[in-house]
Each structure stands twice: as C-alpha cells, then as structure tokens.
Length: 137
Image (cartoon, rainbow, N blue to C red; front, side, top):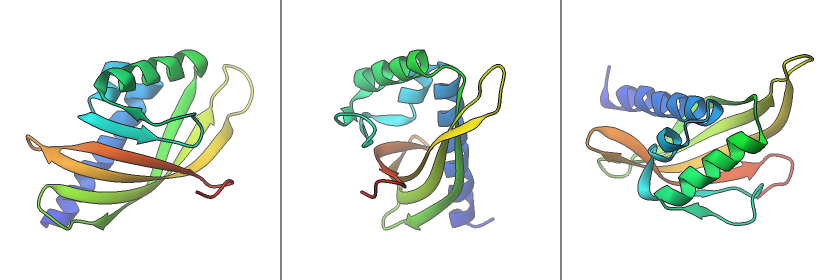
C-alpha cells in the first residue's frame, strides 16, 4: 500500500473509534480523538465546542440526552494532503436512533469536513465542521 492508502485506512480507523466512543459513552476517548485545542462546530448546537474539557463535557451531554444513538460514517474521502502530517477530509455522517423496540430511524444526515493533524503517529481532528444536509451551510 502507498502512503495515501495507509492514510485513508488510518482516517477510517479514527472515524470508527470516534463513533464507538461517543456511542458507548466514552467521552474521554472521544475527546482524545481531537487535538488538545480541537474544535467541533455543528449547526445542531448553539456554538462551537473547543478544547479537551469542553469536548468531554459535550460528549457526556450528548450520550445522556441521546441514549441508543449510533454514528455511522461513510464515504470517507481525503480532499487534500497539502503538507506532511496534515490532511483535510470529508465524509457522510448519519445519526441513527436505535430504540429497544421498534425500528431504527435516521435522525440526521450530515457531511463532516475535518482538518486533521498527525501527532505521534496518530491522526487527530484539529477542526470539524458539520453541515446539515437539509439546511445547507
């Protein structure tokens, strides 16, 4: 495999780890997928969430308010690798409610656009912008 392919696999692993962390309530692990001063910005929430402690608080709040929710990331795409250890990516993110009884329901379909930085051999999110598909930017 070439460097680009290895990076894409690493990005997919990052996204899988992030999704499982927030879905299982591991707020610390989810926050650690961001750089220490990383930023999460989504129009679903009133303001961007920046910094490790704020990211942990956000993830805990999400899990408490939205139990049995799953984040499903597909179509991951590296849009740029302008410098070593830096990448921009785009992917689709579905947020799915999975009730104990009944049918799973897609709550939101979004696009995530990330600025990633490689730190000590691991890709981390420096900045994530979430775009709601039904609301534009």
